[in-house]
Image (cartoon, rainbow, N blue to C red; front, side, top):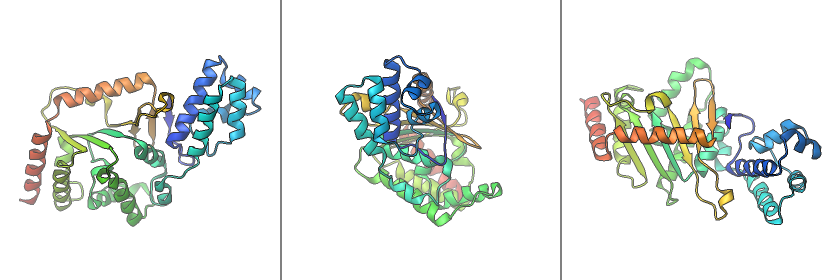
Length: 297
């Protein structure tokens, strides 16, 4: 399912799992969405929003009615009602709603729930490795779009997201960059030199992998996949409640969230292809350090 981002009702991970499980139960019962909605006296669009994790709030009476309609077991009903409770819990990032671009609010929820993030970037650095000055430079570039932003709050949000890299949570970050990202002096040579020094320090972090694809690299699937982020989630004690991977693709005017098995398989193949031709981590660190010296020369 390819889901366009919704700036008003960003689904959390429990909402996504709840919606997926309800959709699976409906399909197992052999019912169309329209038929199930009619039996539960709700609109088909309302049920679609629930199944796709895009509803603002889920009522237990609605879930109970769907369980009755689908003939869910007592254990399945218990799991779904637990997910309703979990979906009502706010994430810390929601207190920064005034500082974030609305269309990526959904992404922050998924990033915080993920156990691992892989990102392939060809033009700019991903937020989890950016310095404050680099972030400010990107917002300067975006000024012409007329997007209002409180830079102090934006930087505070960025730094709060980055804290997870230093917490003993088991979270891992894998970043592969085109060499162009290192060579383009975003924000000026001073800003870029400091940013590359920061990247060199991150190379030593045990849960962070940084690798670069030099300009003259054999062809690879990253050329056609373009920039993307692959998020993977921790295993739940109950396997049916484990959320499958999600691919986030950010465009110039919006974003897509992809979670069909066929879509995930294609991006996993792209990840493998990219990693096959990327510099290893020690060579990447040497390239980053050498490029930082060039900026300071």
